Every structure is written in C-alpha cells, then in structure tokens.
Image 1 (cartoon, helix red, strand yellow):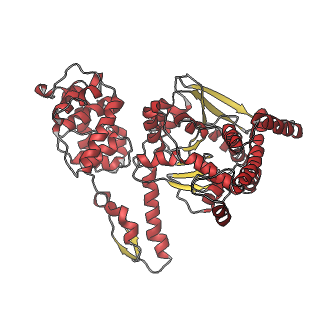
Image 2 (image 1 turned 120 degrees about the horizontal axis):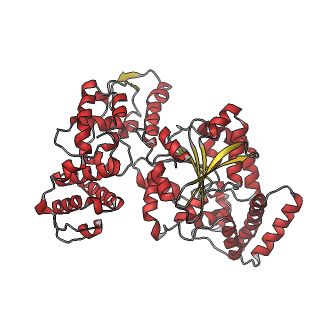
Image 3 (image 1 turned 120 degrees about the vertical axis):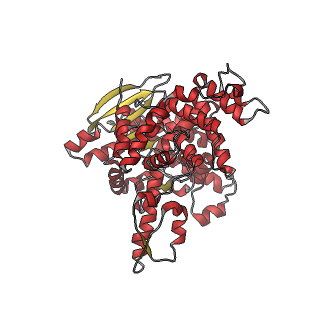
Length: 535
C-alpha cells in the first residue's frame, strides 16, 4: 500500500527533517534519554533517591497545573530537575568534590561557562556506534544528503559527523538562537535548537534557559515557518506526545490560513518507532490542539525508510546548491558593495577555489551555454558519485557524459534512462536521440552478462561477496568477473560497499580509467538496482 512517504518521494522534493534523541538512541551505545541523563548527574554529585525527588517535583507541578498531560508534567519536571542539578553540580565542582577533564574553576570563572553544561557537553562529545547497525547507518547517511534542512534538539554531533563523513561538501551548522539571526541559504544547513557540545553555554536544560528560548520563540518560529512553507516535513526520533514537536507544529499552524493548513496536512509526517514492526502502518491523526491533521507512520524498519527518502533525486545535491549560492553571492552582492564590478567569464570547474581567488578582484559571473560552463567528470569520479548514491553530479552532466561515451563502453547509467527526464533536459535534440538509442543496450542485463569471460570465473557457486573477494592472491579482473557471474545470488548492498571501496582506491591513486571487467560489473549492478521500465 502506498504511504504518505511514497507520495512525498514522488514529488521529488528535498524535505525539512526534524531529528530527535530517538535517532541517536537508536544508533549509539548507552545513549541516555532526558530523565536518564539527569539521574546520571544526580548520582555524580553524590545525591541519592533520584526518583523520590523527581516524584515530589512531579506532584508539585501537577498540583499547580491540573490541566497538564502526563507528558507535559514529565517535560516540566525534567526542566525543574535540570535547574536543581545545575546548582548542585556547580557547587560540588567549585568545592572540588567533582572534576572535569581540562576544565578548572578558574576556567569556569574566566569563560563564564557553567560547569554543569560543560560536563554535559563532555558527556555527549564521544559516542560509539552500535555494532549491528552498520547497514542502517549507511542508509541513514545517504538519507541525510537528501535533506534540504535539518533541525534537532540533540546536543551531540552525531548528525553532522554522519553527514560530513558521507559528503565532501560539509553541512553548515547553526547553534542555538544565533543561527536564526545569521544569513542563511536554505540548503544543507543544520540548526541545533537546544545547543551543542561545541558550545556548552548554549545548551538548554534549565528553567532560565527555556524561559530565554521562549522569549525569542516568535522570531525562531518565524524562521522555521519560512523554511517549512514549501517543503515536505518529516519528524524522526520524536513521538507525537513530545512537547517540543507539538510546540513547533502549533506555532506553525497558527500562522497559516485554512487553505495552507490543508496543503500542510499532505506534507507533514511523523515517523514513530513501533518495536518489531517491519511494515509501514499509516494513521491519520486529527489533533485539535495542534490545529491540523497529520500523518503518523509506525514502523521499526528504518532501513527501508532511509532508503526510500534517499531516492529523491533533483539532479544536484543540497550541498551543491548551497555552495553555488554562496559563491554567487560572494561574486555579485558582496563584491558589488566594494566597488564597480568587472565582468569576466568564469567556469565552475574551479568552483572549490573560486572564493579564495576572488578576494582581491572586482568581478561578477557570466553564465553561458552549459556545454561551455560545466566540466564533464572523469569516469571514476562519475561512477563513485553514482554508486555511492551521493548524486552530487547533476542529472544533465550525467547525460552529457553518457552521450560522449562510445557506443560499446559500459558504465552505470540507468538512474537517468527515463524518456521523460531526457526529453525535459537541456540537451540538444541530437544528444537526446543518442540517449534514447542507448536505453535498450544499457538496461539489458543478458546482453552484458553473456560477455563475461568464462575462463576468468574462479568460483561459479559463490553466494556472498566476502566469499569471492577474500580469496588471496587473486587478480582484480578475475574477482570482478566472478562477482559478475554470480551477481544475482549476491547481496547488492554488500556489493555496493565493495564497489565504492574499489572506486575510492582508484581515485586516490589518481587513475582516470576503468578496466573492462569493472565497467561490466558496475553496469550489471546498476541494471539490477536501478533499471527503469524503459527497455
């Protein structure tokens, strides 16, 4: 059954994604929830009977606010407990009853950093990935690259570390309220609403912190709303009862017309973990308190969820959009303020160095015919971007590379072998015709499978990638041919990891060509993974 996620994928828009502590807890060893963190620090300062104290705080809040739900009572109890803990922890630290590595009372005095928040930042600074989560983690990183903007209340650096390890173009991070008053580009940006381990004093955990945050909530909500107006919105690692989520949605819906709310309801989805649930169970929730309906997907199959979101492909990654926007602003707006602009024609083939090169020059950009402006990548860079699913090379550049390959060359191409996609491209009609002619050849598995050199296949019954690649002393060509021969019996994700590793090694060595055997293997994998219904 088609779910709201499938519909959003069909719209092919990069989503705004909110990521909560549930995601860090899913991937990381011994990752605490809010209450567990407070209990951990309570014991650290030598206090006892944590839950006795917590119950007393809860009872007081319930008495003062009888209309609060249980989740609201827990939320405000955690905040009050955090306030009490900061006072207890800082006193114990100043009395030298507890210590923080490389941080002294003098450091606290000079930097005005709360020792309690410094200790929290140290607690979350280091983390370890759970051993059985590697495949899902790879899918999670691919998913992150397809987000337009990420917002989180998490302190840890798991999101940005994961993103940056998967892309050479780093995500731009904004911490606390500061990020809402800085100039932004609206792509490949991470907003850490409640602070970060990188900036302890911006961590929000006490009553005063939340009060200050609330005082600026109008401006913060306005910024979030502007981000969310034209994008699908997905909540991960939160529950529908989460106070932070409910406040964000309520602030959002209060600013919308009835017609806008109706549009929102088809673009707002909350993913709620249901243990051992492999299917996607969709529910439509009409929550009058939130002011809108929203879709809730209940599942424990986050691997499939991440894979689905990763299918979004606009031909250029959000990181690339931000990079070009930044450079164009530097070229035209910022340089224009400093004096008369001279015009020169620049090619983005040197875009990575462009910002540095223009610091002492008065220039602007001329954008001309794409065939003169854009550089066609070498086959190894192209294949690595393609197989890793980073998709940072645009669809049109992929098409131009395909057009320029000779008729017998093999390379992965099926992601773009779509007649409608080709027809809508900016290619010349003759170039489009060349691509149309390539569709059948490059999507026909049997045509390429039967060219495998039989004498190079050293194991015709292999059922795993590891079984083939672990044979010592075997030449690469024979490994590639044996993988190709057995490909329908192999795990494609394991094969994908192997191919990425091989391509990265070739790129690191400075190679610019692929062997016939590796080309064939790449194409066979591509057909099985990405073939469209065109042949």
